[in-house]
Image (tube, rainbow, N blue to C red; front, side, top):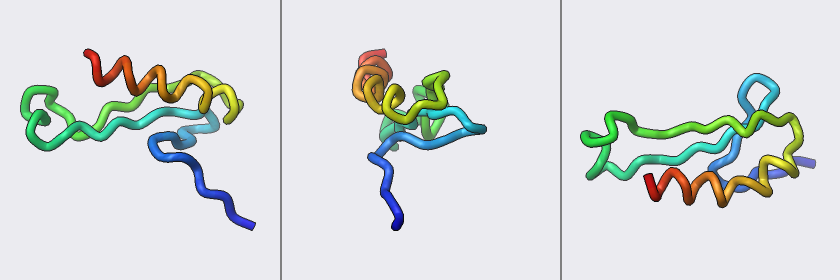
Length: 61
């Protein structure tokens, strides 16, 4: 059985991270196509609980 992870979260070197895709029209200002923030945890539940908060912080910056 395979499980699909929620959008914007992935595993990077045994630790969960959140990925935000920068909109094309502002990529030249940000200088990146995506912003990645580690959750510093190996626990998926803990990473998922903070995902929305992290994405909101990135959008507000």
